[in-house]
Structure formats: C-alpha cells, structure tokens
Image 1 (cartoon, rainbow, N blue to C red):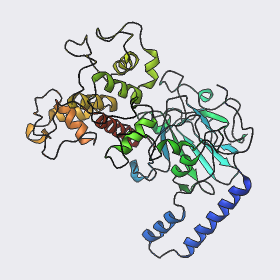
Image 2 (cartoon, one colour):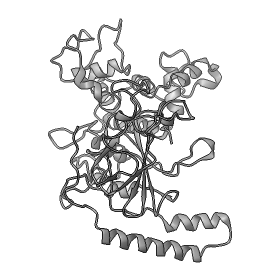
Image 3 (cartoon, rainbow, N blue to C red):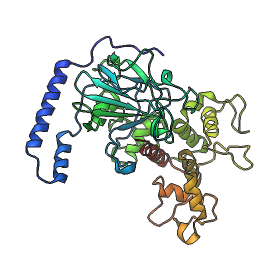
Length: 423
C-alpha cells in the first residue's frame, strides 16, 4: 500500500513551540508550589500535565473508536502509559508529527515476555515530544507465526535516524510483545518534552484530524463520539444506554431505521444479533463468506448471510436443533446472548469454573438453575460485568434481547477486550 507523504505541514512550528513553552511554564509553576508529601506531589504533577492537546495527525488512515485506558492497572504493579487502539493486523500506522525514528528492532531481537520478535518505534518529534508506537506486526500476513520479520513491521526504507513527515507510513499494527494473547492493536504513548514523561494521549488523539483532510471540514476522530452523534428520534443523551450506543454506532456495528429511530426496545432476532457480533468481533470474515451455506435456512441471498457465516466461522454462533438450521428470524434470548458474549471473549475457563462450582455458590440468579443449559455462561458473563439481572434477582434467560441491551453488552464486551490488552 502506498500512503501519501505530507504535501503540507499540518503542524505549525511556531504554534507548537509556544505550546511547549507554555506547558513548561505551567509545570515549573506547579513544581514551585509542590507540597511536601509524595502523594500530593504526584497529584500536582498530574494537574500540571492534565490532558494537553498536542497538535498531530491521527496515527491511522481511518477513524476508529477506543477507550481511554491511560493509568489503568497492569501486571507487576505498573500503570498503563498509553491508549490501546484495537485494529486488525497490518493496519497502516502513520507518523503523527514530523520527526526522527528511533528504537527500531531491525535485527529481530526477541521479547523477554514470549521469546518472539517484538517491534516498536519511538518517533522523536521535531516539536520536542516523543511518540511511542508499541506492538507492531511480527507475523507473516494471514498468520500468527511470529515470523514476519522487519519487512512486515516497518515501512520499506526506514531505519533508525530516518526523518519522516506527518502522515507518512511508518509500519503496521500487530500483536508483538505482550499483546500476543490479547489481540492486535496500536499501543500509542505521548511523552511531553521527551521520553519518560508520559501523559494521557486521549485528548490529542481525539482532536487529531485524519491525514490529508481539510481541518476545517474534518472534526477528527473525536467527532464520531460527539454526544449528539446518533441523532435518533427515539434516543436521548440521558438514556442509560446512550454512550454504549454511540460507541457501537460509530463503529458501524448497529444502524438505525429509515424513520429516523433506533427502536431501542424492539426485540432482536438471532440474525440481527449475529450481524452485530460479526461486525464487532469478526469483520474481516464478512466478505469471505463461503458460496455454500452453513445453515439450511440461511441462503446466500439472505440479507445477513455474510454476517451469519462470519459469526459461525469465528465460533460466535451455533445452529439450533441438530445444528443444521440457524432460525435467523427467531428472537435472540438473553441466555443465547450471554453464551455468544462468552465465546467472543474466550471465557472458556470462566464458564468451566462456573459449571464446576457447587450449586449453592454458583446460582447467581433465582431463575437460572445450575442445570439450565446456559447457566455457566450466564454466570461467567455476569462476573465479567457483561450482563446483569433485575432488582428482583431474576435474569429472565428466555426473554428476548432488546436492541438497547444488545448495543450495551457489545460495547461492554469491546471495552473488556480492550482493557485486557497488553501494555
């Protein structure tokens, strides 16, 4: 893929310099006023660098939604120093500013975490800040073999010391390092004034325009999460599911109706929920649907054929009865919903543990007996924070899933998957 290099500088050196100087003044001011205790000093430091908006372009060619996990707890007593943006392997990564490349693994050195090659880039910005790209691709395309080498991690011709411009292709996203077990993503860090001064990059990323866009007409990735984004006639910003709906709508997982509404409390069919799950967890499989249908009642002319086949191929859904049919128009039950969520997140161990727990300890809901077919999945999904019951202690596993609930649980699942991403 050929990615355009910048035809114009999107960053004003004067503006950046002024911003850095102003920020330095603020930091020195807070340092002068710093209280004696270590805890208070840390609090002052956090205030001094709270959510600065640094001019940059977005590190991807397209907009995506992600969750701000800066400061989240990580193994070994660490805290997360960046934002994890979940994207497929080989997603192009762009330089966010003009700068010089450093910390490139050009000899295939192995990670101490799993003895596989890891690939990162530290972009030392001309603006005086450092930008860290972690978990770049280490696989041969289409595999998870860890044998892709430098050519599938870094863009051709790049080496340590190469000067790049904002918007230039520098490499591809992947799962190297400690992301092998959690999914491909870009871990992006912003260090003000140079490395090891991490600040939350979320505000800067949200404000960043796509490369090549007219800044006056492109609100940047933040625009897709604008509180007024969905504009559904039957959904308000005070609805309990609004933020979840905004997230999955922005990702193209759910859509509205021609009448301008979302119909949040309409029931969801098995076909509709399978489509939501495929768009969320197996989008790359939708266009690769087989010519021969998997299920006897879902022909290749059915509106959701590609999504249902993708969900089946990814192991998210199963057939009904003897497994040869899917029953696409049947209501999606709350029990089936919990089971699909567990499959999507790979909660097999949690499901097995719930199944093995004595009945007196495992019955989370009064109306879900231990011998109910989906009791372990419902328990595991509840413990993971994906589903909940009513205030009366009932889950109502056979009730149909509503569109608002579907949007909410899928958003929770995506956040849970992202929170589990490597550092």
